[in-house]
Image 1 (cartoon, rainbow, N blue to C red):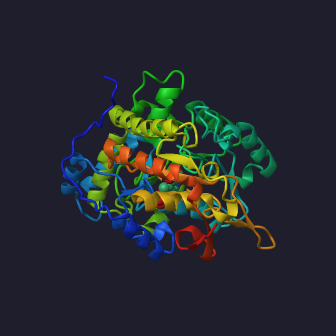
Image 2: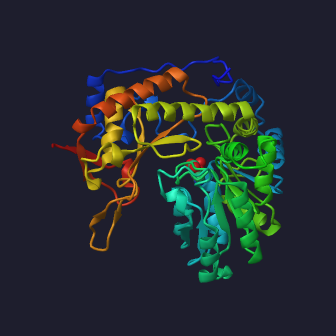
Image 3: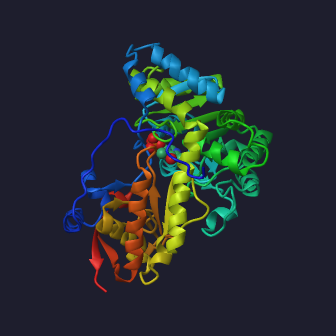
Length: 458
Ligand SMILES: *Cc1c(COP(=O)(O)O)cnc(C)c1O
């Protein structure tokens, strides 16, 4: 059979309301033309993020009832620790309430002012945590990763030459650790090869620099390695993940991604001194080290979810849904970023709306049209989100204006995708009538969440 169907049946449903186009126009006006300010229940298909928005399995819900809520040394903690150790073979496991809490502890215990942290591409919370303690977050993405038309299989890789240069320029004493983010979320959910991780580890080891993996989508990356890298097609996803972690000295995780849970994270490491320092901060910030800001039932749900994320049939289905969406968009001719990432499809708004100048935000034009036409909520990754200004305060355009359709895990069925494709087709057909926008209110940091827009009449 060539159809790759959902490897699950539906046992519980959550009804969704589909409001009329007239009501959507009104709702968006009330939200000042910013989809972040909409009520979630006014969105039919919500593709704002894949973080914490997934559906849990019957096994996860059953595990929740087994949650041991003892303050210290609970059974749920033991199960969580054993699972994470089975996947990573890393010694010290510290649960956190989500990924950025793990990043904050890592940054605050290890980074001094002026230190440099290389990464393929820093995720925004990682960058913020590094900069908050005075560190410098350097992106060393490979050249292919910058070209939206390049179809290389591992566009998330780090550029090894740039890494060597970075270490030579700053000196190893300024680099308390290096990072690699799998998959590369900021770079479009693109895959990182095992060869790249191995080579990074070899380079940094020569200087005695430890390697930290930002492993939020480790299972999606393991699937990419299985499919695209020579020598891995006979290995299980668990074995591939185990090899990935064998090159790591530490890792940070958001279990809202490949933990298939709605909340949670962890920080893990091999070094005993690091672990002691991490634990000291964990106790102040998150909680006792055997629950770290999570309930026992959360630890249970994550322990089950981490292993489910490594099931081959699940990953094959997840990647097939993304392929299905991108194939359909190809047929219509809508420009998208290639190749497919692991958790989202990215529309190229600059190419869809060539009549809109970058500083009239083509990404917002597409995002708002998707909402008005079909109640689909997406997010702009472009001039608004990366909002940068030169020294005179003149706003700069982002090199790329993308619209991300992030896919929650195990939530939407094929008919939801068919509906989504119809909505995108409708937007594509009306693209000449889509207006640009101007910002009428904004904050200094992370303006995209709260700013107000107004349509510019053509
Ligand atoms: C989501 C994410 C984080 C932060 O995790 P939160 O759980 O949202 O705090 C860090 N790195 C990457 C790559 C992510 O995708």
